[in-house]
Amino acid sequence: MHQNKEVIGQWGESAPYWEKHRAIIHEMFAPVTQALIEEAGITGRRVVLDIATGPGEPALSVADLVGPEGKVVGTDVVPEMVEAARRESSRRKIRHASFEVAGADSLPFPANTFDAVISRFGVMFFPSPGDAVREMLRVVKPGGRIAMAVWHYAERNPFHYTVSQVVERYAQSTVATPGSPDMFRFASPGELLGIVTSAGSTGASERLLRFSIRASISVEDFWTLRSEMSEKLRTKLAPLSKQQIAKLKCEVLEALRAYSSERGISFPAEVLIVSGGK
Image (cartoon, rainbow, N blue to C red; front, side, top):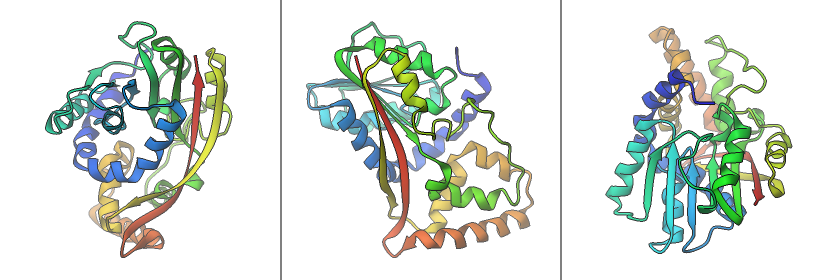
């Protein structure tokens, strides 16, 4: 099942903002990248696939770990994201990382190609997560592992929830249909784990990762980042008047100050790390 062209287009519109805020995103989600590396057993000289890599993370972080004797391939269904990843890889002169446009449910690689396959915050948006997991298991080598990160419940993640609670007072919110692509699609423990197990993975496991989303930015900068990166949020804000947006922004900033200090922002966060072997 292929990704909807309209959805791909929406992510394509967001790609410049993901590229713009690359350094902050890297800082915010470094603990999740590290958890995926640990669960997938990634070490030096490994050959690794990163699915839904966006503008190149965590693929480029993994490339630093595996070194020139290893190899990393990043895939994404959004061409603009792949181009952004290629630009950063070229800028950093990382020759053992490459990036391709590909859907998660039809990977263009032979079976048994990679030592590990990872995906950070991607599987929630796949049209067919079961097919995607089966593809991950197909391309990973026997004895290799796959690992995915998905968000735990929204209310446990104030970096998102604090903003959304204010926005919903101003903009009509639609409730996601159960099973449809959504940021919190696999928030309930056991849901993604069941898919991984059903796909034939051995030794499948799930763990709750509690960490802090930290960034050396102000609440104003964080609001800019969120309102630019999220296509869904931009869509909700679009019909509002300038006065409404100004009032909404003031309320958001006030709510965010609870998570701000002179060192920047820090939100408690919870993510499920689901992994399995072949």
